[in-house]
Image (cartoon, rainbow, N blue to C red; front, side):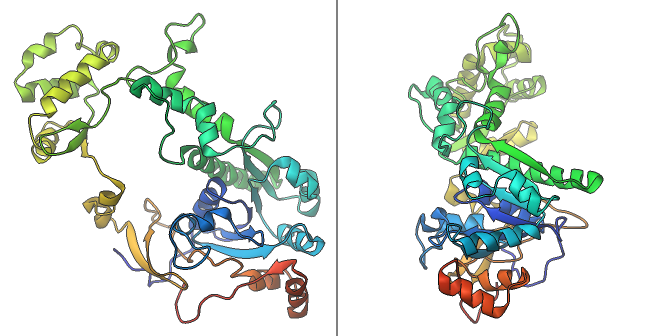
Length: 413
């Protein structure tokens, strides 16, 4: 693992300031990517802090593993937006920001006096991006939306049920993270548009609509046409034997997809007669008969070890990968080669494992520049940057409109 000793170069979003009113997973995932890209992200938290701070094991209260994985490169300021002075402080931050990112329901934003018109009156160039459950123009507007709920709403558990016989949620926050990525490209595109036009704008990134497109891009399938040419559901993805194949000593993931893969596989097995099987002649035939195809492949894969198959499939130029668990993924040799993991010293948490920013840039590389902050760690410095005097800051802290926490001494961010 590589260390984080050298000072990273500015990222492509250096100079962009983002006021981040998001919490839990979706919004913080988006704002962390923007922060990795170099933006100055000011994480505005309520006095009790982001809920995700308290999920999972931790060495310090409010510094759980999911929080640490979603909030590096940010600064934390605590403001009580129910207090008029806390809300006034937020508006002063907005006045000097490029982006306001939030996942608070729009009605709650309006009640706070933070609707787009009010925010644009404070800062006409602001990119005002709301990421929440449902578009404001539909009947579901304002309804609560969590990852499990949106997974169900867009049919993901039903698709799992078609394969396994029982509807189940996917064991990852897919909707949160996919919508978070959508928020990232929405914000960066809007910043580019502002450079050309000089104007800010309001952006809505709804989870339901985002994930409906995500799922139906695969599974609208025959219902794309009028009249329909087939049922909804991409048959290859719904094949009951589409799963990692058991080998003699473990599991392997293999995808015999295009015609060349199928030809190479049959020749490698010495089963050239399968090339003339009418069920498997072309990709369209194999798609229609995908259950039989996968059953045949699984039967063959079971006869050799994982290492033997990895070598043979590589020689045949057939896509394959070992099946990792989350634990073994952290020992993957390729990730070690590219320095994906690093050990860093966190001021309050000690030595922790951190993931690098994926990919490489030749000129303005994203980088990990800051540790995930303690609750309110940067309140005083951010307020000072916004023009508050030391006496003003003391008054805000004394009234409860703001809260601060000093970082642990003696360690680098």
